[in-house]
Length: 198
Image (tube, rainbow, N blue to C red; front, side, top):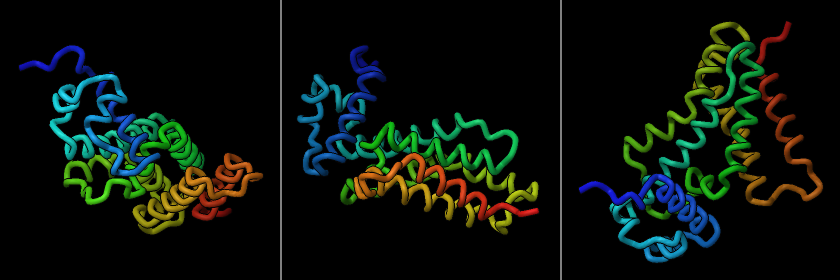
């Protein structure tokens, strides 16, 4: 039986965003399908029609969070100098987190107790970071970066941007700090540290 037209992709996105907001602001206990439906001005039938139940909703929220990050990273121009491309990816990572802060904890914060992504969801999550690994692999191949293994450099770069973004979203940075400027500086210094000199 085809899905009713009112249960379209716009409603799906609205439900996922609201689910992420509930999780990030009030915790896992706030996420009930009844409340989610009421908050999104729809019915629980619509939620079940779109997701099939709470476990499937949570899985889809996890995948959607990484899908959005991956879309933003893939939109970055990675042509030309790998070092500058790496810096642009770092900027896009922060922009993605600030655009969807309610999804950041879903990806990395463990806000869904007991949730373990299946193999397919894990593969989709890792695919979001493919542009980072591609730029680093190209940079090593062209002699711009000094790393021996792209995976090691990618993990180090990811750790730096993830740490800074987590501090910013958590509100733990000093109030007088220019977060954007500090972030950009850290990204550039990290890139320079991996780059060959002379």
